[in-house]
Length: 67
Image (cartoon, rainbow, N blue to C red; front, top):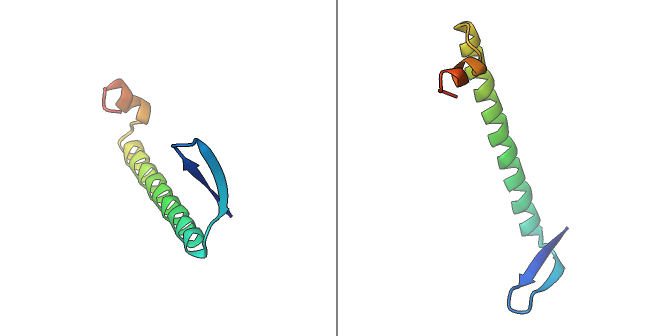
């Protein structure tokens, strides 16, 4: 896996190999983002289910200026 290094003084961009630690950190960060996206999707689905139980939709909330 490669990373870009940009020298802003010379505007030179070089590609170098990532270290094992950098690769692991990058993968860990990707996993964390995926977990946060999954959590957000579950929270949205839960909120929409609550709205549906009340007979409302997200469009209804927007019409009320709440969404």
